[in-house]
Image 1 (cartoon, rainbow over the protein chains, first blue to last red):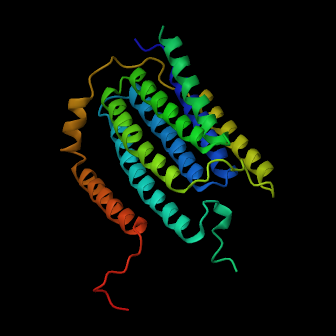
Image 2 (cartoon, each protein chain N blue to C red):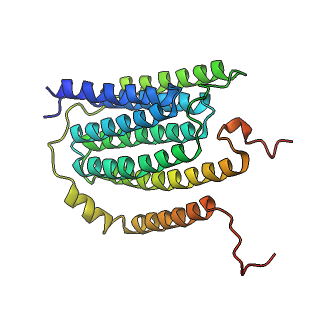
Length: 103
Length: 168
């Protein structure tokens, strides 16, 4: 039925994670940083579900992916609220401008 | 046939992810995020995780993406956005991430994974039983986390308005 080996799913997930990591490290827009975090969490979920496909006895991988999704939703809500509050104070969403504690 | 579907979904996922991470226009980034979420949901279907695929679309496309779009509309000056900070950090970032990719790829390629997949079985009923049986405590803790996040984001995002009956 499923002729795709596990390695390919892992490779796609690794590439997705790396793209998210590059975005997180390079970009200076807070919203894009949050989106990159979502990319990395999705890559992790893909890995978990791929493992689950090959060891489906008690669906532990899918259940773990559910908890990751729940925590990611909470993280997105709080993160966006923080971005909004930051924008109210500084009128910008560049992460370089979050330097109130630096000087 | 499965190979074609897999390749198409993987290409959709990765190209959209590239748009998210590297596009100069934040609207394009958000739309790329939509493509990534849909591609991941399709990959879940090919992995016979039907219920998780529906949850992915409901939560991410219906919830998270809408939230991000609201934040984009509320904050961003869409026209002028620089891709990266020119003052440094690009080369170390790429070296670090390339090393990570090499490590992950090596592990994925060299480990002896089980070669044949198990027969497909429906997952929804088993997931429901697991959530209300073995994983009941984490399930309830997750709902508390979501409640806390909801209250916290409302508190963080509201305008600090002083009512007439408040002092100070």
